[in-house]
Amino acid sequence: MDLRGRKLKFAAVTTMVVLALSGFSSGRGTGGSGGDGDSGGGCSSSGQDHDGSSSRQDDDHDGSGSGGSGSAEVVQDSTVELVSCATEADPYAVVEVSNPNGVSDRVTVVVHFLDDRSAVVDLRTVEQVVPANETVSVQVDLPDAAVAARVDHCEADLMPGTTG
Image (cartoon, rainbow, N blue to C red; front, side, top):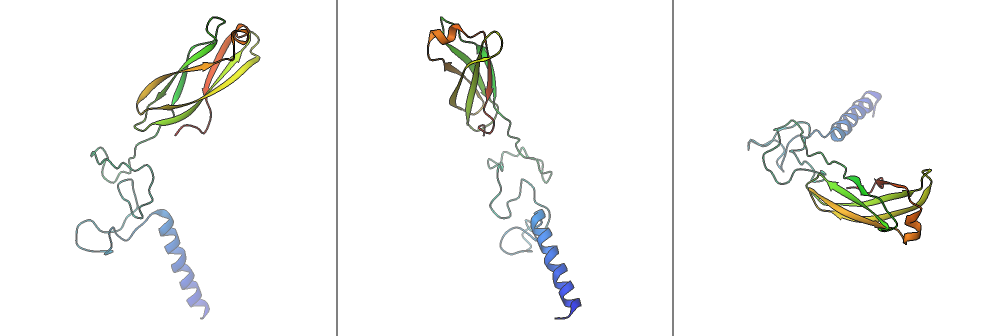
């Protein structure tokens, strides 16, 4: 093959790779370009499923999308709020975990039990499943009242990478 043919072949392959990676398709369905009104090319959006491998697609088809604008449900992180810290009388902390999403979430709650100088007395974790669109109370226990007697305050957080 001569140099001109190689350049043309390279340009064609490069164009196909770019189009494939950008989500451009020549049409939906098996016929390529047909006359059924649902074919034709274009860039992909959340309303299209060209290869069946899209993630977080709105499958309930409630009509809340806006045509080809590419809108999709945004998944938000669950949040944690400290309700009470451990005391000698109650050697546990209570936190509330809120899940603002339409699907359940498995999280790991982390509570730092700190003394009056903010040094760590103890650190405890609890795994919790939070149902969709709900807030749950989680009790995080210390081993005994003697440890709790050294606690001045608490800090609660969710372990990174565990929501979702």
